[in-house]
Amino acid sequence: MKSDVVSPEGFRCDGRRPNELRRFNCDMGTASGGYAGSGADGAAYVEQGNTRCLVLVFGPKEPSMRSAVLHDRATLSVEFNIASFSSGERKTKLRKDKRLLEMASIIKSTFESVILMSSFPRSEITIQIQILQFDGGSLHTAVNATTLALMNAGIPMEDYVVACSAGFGNGHPILDVNYTEEGMDVPVISLGITPRSGKVILLNLESRLHLDEFEKVVTLARDGCTQMHEILDTAVRSSAEALAR
Amino acid sequence: MSGEQFLSTSERTFVVNALREGIRVDGRGAYEFRGLSIELGGGGFGSAEVLLGKTRVLANVSAEVVRPTANSAEGFVLFNTSFSPMASPAFEAGRLTEEEVLVSRMLEKAVRRSRAIDTEGLCIVAGEKVWSIRVDIHVLDHEGNILDCACIAAISALLHFRRPDVTVEGDQVTIHPMDERNPIPLSIHHIPICISFGFFDKGERVVVDPTHLEEQVQDGDFIVVVNTHRELCTMSKAGGAGLDVARIVQCTEVAAAKAAEVTELIRGALTKSNEIKK
Image 1: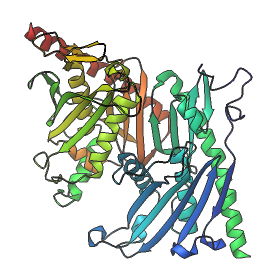
Image 2 (image 1 turned 60 degrees about the vertical axis):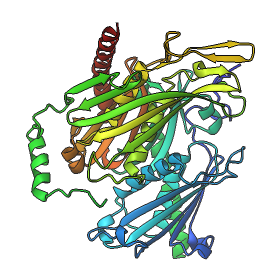
Image 3 (image 1 turned 180 degrees about the horizontal axis):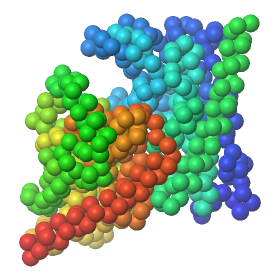
Image 4 (image 1 turned 180 degrees about the vertical axis):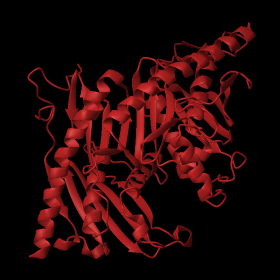
């Protein structure tokens, strides 16, 4: 039998309330000496529930390819990877998996509009994203981790990009959807906002959601983003304090 | 891209300034589609040529019997896109561009993930034989908004397609030739229609169905896939100008209305092609 996404008592399968985020944990960067070996200029490790993501930022540096040189701004390249050990079933990665390319392209165009690209003409910024453990919401976890990693690398941005997902299951909008819930065919919106202007710069929906429900779900996702902004801001400030000490 | 034509600054300001006065360069209203013509059956069952303004996309559907992945009782729907250099100097033969990846992923999400096609109905013998439906999308002419045009072409071709009838007796599977038994249409649950929006002036101004010129000038896009039951199938926005939630909700409402219009046109083209067959 198909179980309910939200139980009659108002709990979800992992014991959360519908409008509750998952546990968030993060570690910003090379400052703590964690990923110094890779030579990255910035790094962030983020856990949202059981989804774990590591992002390394390289640059601004000289472009590796001549074709990537733009005379008036930097180029951004994003690599998105899901580790083969990240989910229950071991998957060998296809080299040209369109899903991964699409994810990379979404993240690339999102951050292109937020990073002050014109401050670094003729240079390249590379973002490497690795999903280490997959429990749903890989897009929004990756976006949050990328924001932290870029800040850690000291790359100037107009604003944070904070992202959060929301879904809709048996009559309830639910926040921060996990893998089990995604598997129950819950429509999921991934939303990314720039918190200072409050505007949406990233929006992604897969599977069907009725238009009448849409506004409720999007509003919930926005509230989630606002919560996420506070969490990220605290993390950034405490890591900067540790650095200054 | 090597063959990309660069726009001059004056062309850009011309487009934006015209929009500020509420005029589009080709004289359309902000929420108006270009002329849409759908031609079905030019190449037999499951072929559709769609002309959206000057953007031309050909979709062709074919089916073959394949072995499913481990004990699955579901058939496959595959999309294959080809952006030929003939359509635009920006396309190179044999190279997978980012745009192409996004178009084919969007089609997959719009049609497959939204369960528009009953994949269980494509099963012949569970775990043994299933139909694999392949949709080939050829972009023949690029004058902006390939995605909407490709989506209309794909779904019209799928609606028009007929597969050969199959009978199973024991472990004997017979595929009847089309002249022996009437071929069977696919079972399609709903018709997803893709509507693209372009934004200008930091998200202040919005247009539907941007032309190639407008696409080059725009500050960002927003893609909504919606069907006549007012269900959102896929939405996508990445980067570009930021939008308010209210603006997004407004866009989805516009998209739902547009999708209903486009669906009518597709239905009209289908009845017309059925009448010709009789």
